[in-house]
Length: 314
Ligand SMILES: NC(=O)c1ccc[n+]([C@@H]2O[C@H](COP(=O)([O-])OP(=O)(O)OC[C@H]3O[C@@H](n4cnc5c(N)ncnc54)[C@H](OP(=O)(O)O)[C@@H]3O)[C@@H](O)[C@H]2O)c1
Image (cartoon, rainbow, N blue to C red; front, side):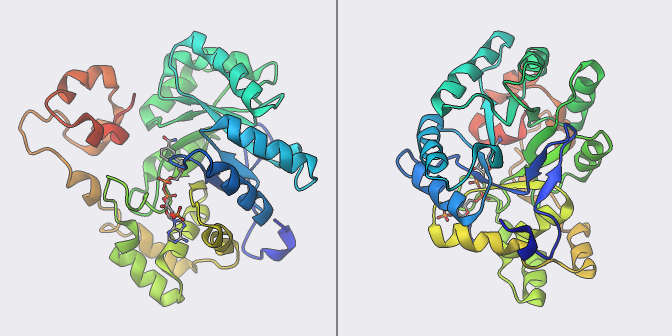
């Protein structure tokens, strides 16, 4: 992406390691094998420099081809992988990821939900196998606890955050502790089993109409203007290119403020899923966020575990 072309602010956020993270990443979750490689080629050629991925082998082969054809250099790309297994000894799976990717290092390695594995993650950072380490789905409380014993502070907390689930307290906590917030899914994962319906949110539509933009564009712009990077998925070439136009406009301060009005912060999308049974143990959404799955596992039987999965910390 040519910085000179983009008049509405920089294209990167600064991390507490001194590295820069591109504001927009291609998320590849749910992208089927065979499709993801093509999507990576398209996004890199369109100017994206950050990929957050699942299918490492296919992405590794594609990136290698792009590097050898001179389309982009390894040093220009910001690549993230994630530790999905939980025990401290599982951090060695990074070596397998690097082998699949055919890389010497990863730009960011994320720990999914399990604080007890953090010290082992730190062991990957020191020799440089992972140039930055971060966490995924950490609530304020969990992050606060982690910062109390971490020798290396996480650079990033990757969490759900979008116009109808803004997480202002977590946002502020991350900011004041130098942890950058990385947000998914910026459009609310349209069509998925959780009906967040971000793009039908009346406040978003009203702002979009005033700006003469599509709601999707305003939702994307809201993220980077709020100060976090976004993980966006699209498998459609025209959308991949079009979505980058979010650097060509901005939401003026007067309209931007409307996003923080109380009704828009409503957790209706989530609370509407709340189970009506008196046995349901959580009194508030933040309480739900602060619990560990092992504490609530008993409660999950009899409820739909899948349904609540994104809101529980594993
Ligand atoms: N760390 C975690 O725990 C976690 C959890 C969930 C997600 N994530 C990350 O976040 C990424 C994004 O999440 P997501 O894919 O669920 O949701 P999303 O990015 O909010 O939405 C993706 C959907 O929006 C559509 N879309 C993209 N651009 C559009 C446009 N301009 N107009 C209309 N529709 C558009 C895409 O359709 P087409 O593909 O047809 O264009 C796709 O169906 C994931 O890929 C993953 O990397 C991380």
